[in-house]
Length: 398
Image 1 (cartoon, rainbow, N blue to C red):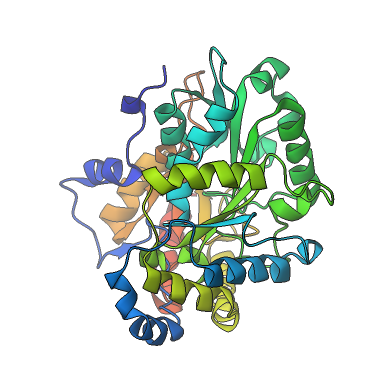
Image 2: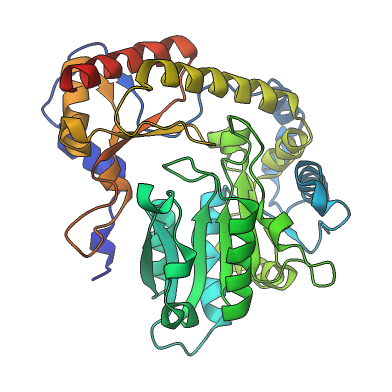
């Protein structure tokens, strides 16, 4: 049964798990997906010049300058979109992408009124906001296995038509959190097709889109573009938290289906927080600047190369296509919870049990129970130290 009691903060659960346990070495926290590469230099200067804006109520739909900067970025980043993004119809700034991922569900549910048992689909493991949104909207969270057996993405062909018929929204992160896999263009096009055929909203969480090792991940809007209609039934979410190492800025956007954006904007105007004017000014400058993004991406690439060097021999180890997490199989240490305690007690490294990012699968198992999530957000020296400690424990257990 899906209730609010069935979802808890993974970090609160980890605190309870480790309570009373002392770290065996000076601690290194690799649990939280909080970028630590430092704010871009332009943040302070732009914020100082715009500080008077804190004295005014900001427009909930964002200033034109910010919407235009987001539209320019989308068209630069995804070349098939050139000339197709209308900043007034297709873009809406958000107080961070999580705010939008949660609150947009109410408009998606309202679009399909009358369903006896509305469903919200999401991968399992998943980002907790998706599950909370489904429960808040009075819908059933339908968890789709996203394991090694399915390529860490839901098997779209395995979803029953009866479930799709009552679906109001489908959440998917690409690159995925926690596994880091990237959905292909063909996969996204198939998913867009399902959304349009069954009339549900496709919510694509692309907050890790700018952190990748090889080719840039394809985007939902380029897969969804209809030259005559725009982006029906599709909305993407992104933010500056990961891209620009600015999680505390709380600045993101939703883009896509113009009709949905219009309905959602009216809802946000009375129900959601505005983005402060100085933050909007800083955000516009960040979306227009790529040098800091490239530098940060290079740092992540170095850390993933280091992970491959130190952990490449571990059971079922793989380097993800995007994001900044390792989804590490620790079954040889007894699974995620046991490994998290071992890493902390023996080496001082704090990691997040994978089971805390998933829900039981109905058959007595949990698709994250064999894993821990390791966030590679620190500097290269700290990362090397932590991964060396982890590698030593995995070697001992082999």
